[in-house]
Length: 422
DNA sequence: TCTGGGGTCCTAGGACCC
DNA sequence: TCTGGGGTCCTAGGACCC
Image 1: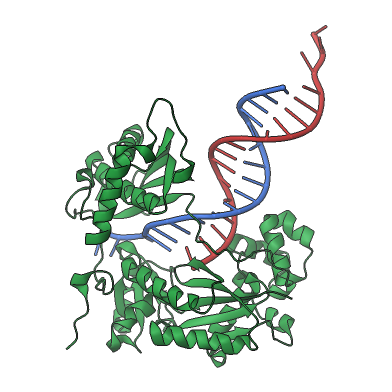
Image 2 (image 1 turned 60 degrees about the vertical axis):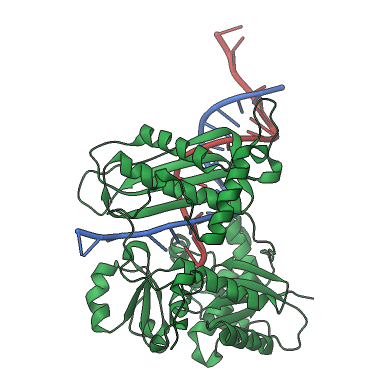
């Protein structure tokens, strides 16, 4: 029997999260801005109807228009979105264990032998709406790629009421014929323009192009996409959220920075957070890279550089990694430039249990540092992020800290920011 | 004044080894 | 003086995703 995949995708997720706690915005246009209030990263359906799109223009170019249109403008509140996301998936996982969380606002489900998949999808949708307050769209297909197509279709056609089933459709090709090739999962800007040059502009045309040709020009990923469009599953459902193979923490500064002391402080903070995540997934790292860059949009001297280091023994110790980060910065820092952004990447990550033994040095997972880090994590988990923090990460906000003109309260994750009723 | 922050996978080509 | 060939590993870069 053929497998049936469903993709459940939250509608305008960040904007929908903001609306949960703001009844006054339930029918209003809402946009959410990226860090530093740089771009629109989510637009509610009312905002989309006014023509606002995500990541199109910088916010400062749209600000006046947004205000004229009386659009509610909010800075990103990722702590809130992460928590709401968990709630959505928790609700869905009550219906089936075959669930793969794909991103903060999407998951794939494997549907079993229900009589009516569409009816089941409607039930999921209604339950998430009633229990969490987030609208979702659900598409169904015999492959993940087709489920993606179906979801997009459900969102684009209001008469679908948020659900669309391609497994039970009399004429799949007539649907694919109306889907632009650039809308297909796995076809980005480069491939879309390449395909169009080769007279392939719809999903249907890609479905019937030769597999070999697709592989030749779009690697095996392109081959798999074509096969998935034909109904042959190439991407299976992954159950466990897999441990990250690399962890990146970076921020643009709210104001340009030129002193090495400031860059060091920022790198400390990023390294600290990267190591926290590393430990939360029970991993150790062998590799760390740092990078700095000036503002490419400014007409002034430009410089960007990156450098990495490999450790002989893996670790997850924050202070060890911060020392290395500072050492690396000395190698690439050049005075005289105004820096926009810095970042830290941990790579060559392994599971804690695979930590090698060493005759001469106690491995991290058997050392006192390990216990210390565990204690720090426990305190921060119980009393809130950054209750205990490295002094080198800075204790207060700086002039160059991230700009967030209007972030909503973290209603669900900070006691002090609970919503008051009455 | 002001332009995001995360991730994954694949491939070509060089280094290195026998 | 002549000067092979195959396999594997590693890395940088490019494509994609949200």
